[in-house]
Length: 329
Image (cartoon, rainbow, N blue to C red; front, side):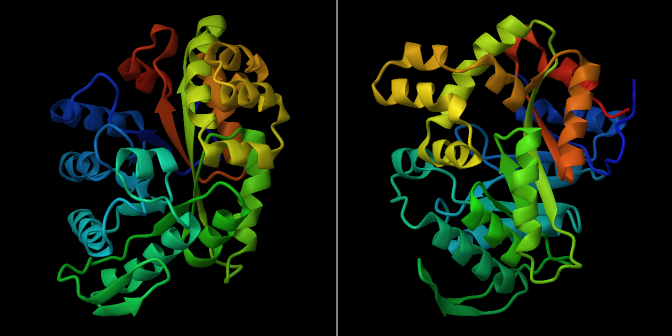
């Protein structure tokens, strides 16, 4: 197996599909043995973002823990600060907090919270978390909420980096200006060249290193027809969500216009058929394990500092075996 070059971090998304959280001790230990440096959780309709990382903090202290992401809307400021502080306290120097606006589907449809001014809400949460995690008493009226006298009694020994999930220019600049970097998602290696420079260019300190974490969807299978067929369902489910549709329009991915038009007309079958194979090949890495590793390297070469792989179980791929096949060593 070829070792990936020019890459100091190499992460895997957790939990692993088909494995219960109670069985993840074995998963985490194997990730360490295989050379993975990070595990990255998320929060949508499965496990919450913090629990898988709390388990990893105890079971695999060698791993760095990241969440990509916690929505800025679905927890109150004080509760979010408590969760971040607790995990940073449990894993000193090994936890990275990721926050973002999420989407109208998760925030509004699933949680009954108005999805209003997502840029400002994310910005305000970051501005609140900084002093709160340092143990300061926060009494502040932000544009999207106010906090009256909260003081977190758990102050992490080491302050966790805060990354912002970013798609278009506004959030990318916010990530460069007020956070320690950005988390990017659903984009090609070539797209990274358009996105990463905006983050770095917005930094107040040009000498500061901004982390760029990319969730990269991977399916190590050579059955290209089956992978593409099944991947189109995932692409349609995500890239018709308004925030992602706007992102890909901004990137110039005009090849998806047919999908967007058919979806808007209510014709789901035509929307799937309108997704070009070339777009699947750009957004979801597939092929032999070696071909997948080479494609992952292209993301790093384009500016990603931390690839966070997300195994897609298309074409009958077993997620546990995929972890082994994609291992950096």
